[in-house]
Image (cartoon, rainbow, N blue to C red; front, side, top):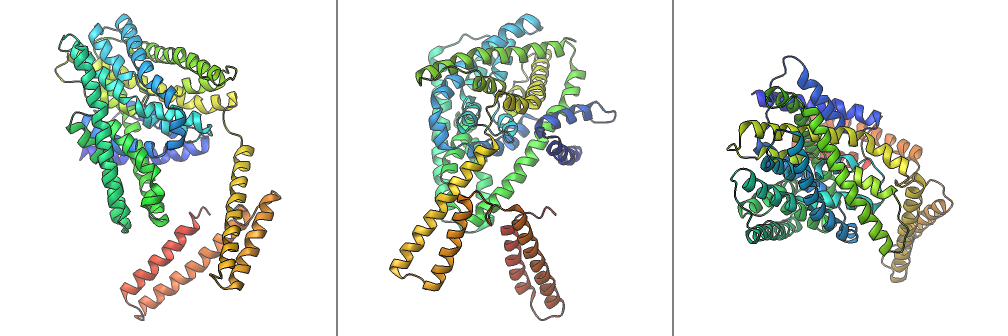
Length: 516
């Protein structure tokens, strides 16, 4: 029962934090971690220990799936070369650097220091996606930081297994066996992703029930993760690739009504899971500190390790960016590599790896690795999380409001012209009543003129749109009252009342949320 109370408290805390984060224009995960740390220091708060299964099997799959669906395939193809370099080379370099530094400044022996390095080597897709939602980054920059965090799991997981073998079992590294393990991790994940994505596509393509569609969508990431782990593959890779594949087919497998419902459901699920996991990270830190007996210098050690990760990232990203820019004939700039370097936050995936360290490891070393991992996660989420948006604005990398508005206006003009062309074809074929086609053509021409003259049309004029929606809501409220009256007086059955109420609810959904 205590666990249920903690989860409910975290959800309430996250709701309050999210409201303040929106007003303060800061990332909710960063503020939630701070709130969790503060709450963990209060007297009477129970000791928090996160179970590995909770993070790996419950929280991680849907969050990874949601992050992968936000990654466009077009942008991913454009950045696959730098993503490959960062997902392999940078991960290995980060693990080695952290191992050396941790061995030098902490009580950890070299083997366990390598375990810590492998745990912290990869950026976290959940944290990166959560921090980047509010940033107006160019598509390629957004795709680069997001794809790197999504596809570096196989490398870090392989290093983690090697580190456990060397650090705990004192075994020698068999490079042939290591290469085979890497092939199984990646190949198994890709195979399961293809099977699960194909199966989900076929089922959803022939499903029209919104409830069943929602259930399939929620079960898909768990199926991909569990099946991949069962055959020795990378569950994270399987979930990510599945989500990217299905994300490219979203308009083909679902209707607009179901997409609205799925968006609302997944938005709620992501909010709840992110709230719980980031809150738990903050809440767990004070308990880990109280349980530690090997060192009192952990804050400085965690800070130095976080700085090490950032320095190594800078040393990889800047030369890589310069090489890519020279190859394309452009002069090297500092703005984009600075933002990419600063966007390498750690989060849920490193925490899951640290929690999965076997209990056969020396308890004092395992506790220290878990503490340092959690502390580095908190440092990156707080320091980089609070400063990433100001850095993006300072570098001028973010897309301007004018650029976004111009792109939207151009798209609206193209869409309107396509509509007019279709009306012309309908007129030629006499496929609809002429008076109706003339009315629609006049409406579309008026819309095109307003867009061309940079005047708000009926789809962008917020004042008019708000007034229209308010009047529609008033009419719907009157109809709902009359529907209730008809039911209470016995003039209609409950079945009829429910059917008509659903129609009214759908109209409310089309109008959007009422913010007034």
